[in-house]
Amino acid sequence: MSQNGLDLREPEPRFADCNSGFSEADYVLYSIPFDATVSHKGGASKAPAFIRKESFNFETYLMDLDVELEDAKMADIGDLALKNTLEGQTAMIEDSKKLASFILEQGKLPIMMGGEHSVSEGPMNAFMEMFHRKGGMIVVLDAHLDFRRQYLDNPHSHASITRRLFDRWGSKSICVIGARSGCREEVQEARSLGLSFVTSRQVQDQGIHEVIEAWDSAFSLKDRPLYLSIDMDAIDPSFAPGTGTPEPWGLSTTVIRHILGELNANVRSFDLVEVSPDCESFITPSLAGKMIRQFIGLKEKRRVSPDWLFK
Ligand SMILES: [Mn+2]
Image 1 (spheres, helix red, strand yellow):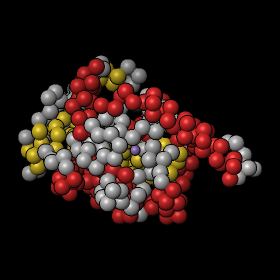
Image 2 (cartoon, rainbow, N blue to C red):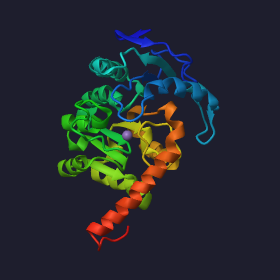
Image 3 (cartoon, helix red, strand yellow):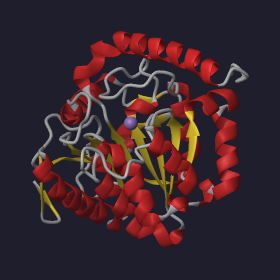
Image 4 (cartoon, rainbow, N blue to C red):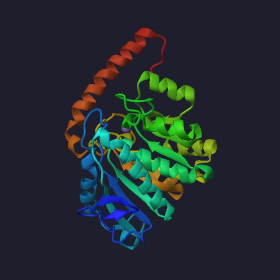
């Protein structure tokens, strides 16, 4: 199959209920099976096939919404053809941007399945080129700030995706919800340059409703066209263990459902990245390692600042 001069590989099966062709569809699903910049565990390139297969588990009728998905005009145009290597990354970013732009220009809503987070760069730029003047904003759900200038000498790494978009489109154009990990320099730069982010702890302490209301007052979030990018590791690993760089103390699936509902009217472009089907069995030792590190970290914090309040 080809779309706007780009090669796409026909999915088998298609995502459930994708019964429309491209031309009549309102929602266009596609996937970018790329994971060559991965730093811990790979496997995100296999995610689209697993997600498509699992999508058949569910009823076509969404009971809580009273919506029949068989009536929605959904197309699944398949995997973007690419080379899953560092050398193939530049072409992947260019091609995915062309594809996302084409879908948006046709007045359709692109829904992209990754891939690791670096696959969002092209689709995010496509969205911003179209919506920047109308106040377009990218909302990223992620455990990681992804604010490194570069990672392993690669400025287009999954660990730099927020930074790439921030540098190009400015501090008012991107925000992160659910953050709880970053190297010291990255966190300092995010603060000094004015990246807007809310940690998973703030979400737990304040409640997601209050967090979104506060952001809506600050940036008129609900009056702007949005790109919503969900990195699966934003979610607590107990809900979503199959991800390459899991971080304990994450968002609950109830919080995710709330965010989807609150922002839904404004979202014009959506992606879901960093599902890694191979990683499902590592989550208990990962949490054990995190707990030991946290325990030592708390001791150290009390040693260097004895009057630090435990909170
Ligand atoms: Mn992440």
